[in-house]
Image (tube, rainbow over all chains, first blue to last red; front, top):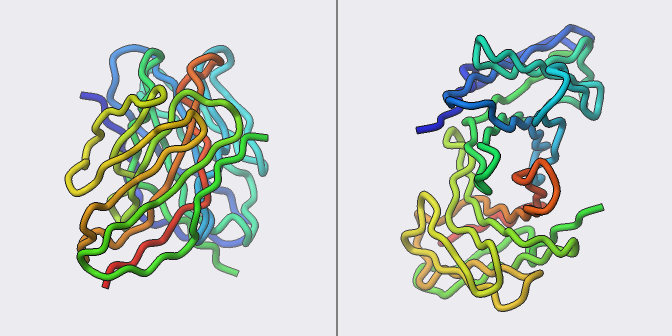
Amino acid sequence: AQSVTQPDIHITVSEGASLELRCNYSYGATPYLFWYVQSPGQGLQLLLKYFSGDTLVQGIKGFEAEFKRSQSSFNLRKPSVHWSDAAEYFCAVAEKSNYQLIWGAGTKLIIKP
Amino acid sequence: DVKVTQSSRYLVKRTGEKVFLECVQDMDHENMFWYRQDPGLGLRLIYFSYDVKMKEKGDIPEGYSVSREKKERFSLILESASTNQTSMYLCASSSPLAEPYNEQFFGPGTRLTVL
């Protein structure tokens, strides 16, 4: 069965520091991959997605993610975080023909001033 | 822009009440989803619908039902609310007509408290 692992429940980063959030998936073929962000009390907003082409994808708010097939990973990165990036981040995976997304448990990002 | 709206941001109900959560999307999407979100558990799929009057059970359908009479509207029903249904409920929609077919668009969520 497909699964998604976000190994870090919480991550604390100083403002201005770089960020990497990890996402690993278990799936045979090349999946469709997504990162969503949820600000406190809000719904989920799509940050970026990968479904074909260049394995380094750019998203909104200065985020990027790289699909590494050999490592079954799709890690999210940002070179310099801002206090407004404090939120919960979810990785999701799907196979092309399936409407459903398989979700990671989320990583809560805390920004230190 | 895709817009998904949910009828209430916050809702407080009593145990045993029948509760309706409404979701409306304005982008003519075929697929609609209801999730509940609890701390440490991520998003869990309750039900989804891929067409009007069609529904499929998700991972945790017990205690819930759904209704989709019109393409733009997907309702989640708690027949007899219980305290363990206190949660954040998220509605989403997607279209199978444009790649990636499974990108989902979310509403703002309804935080339901059952007393």
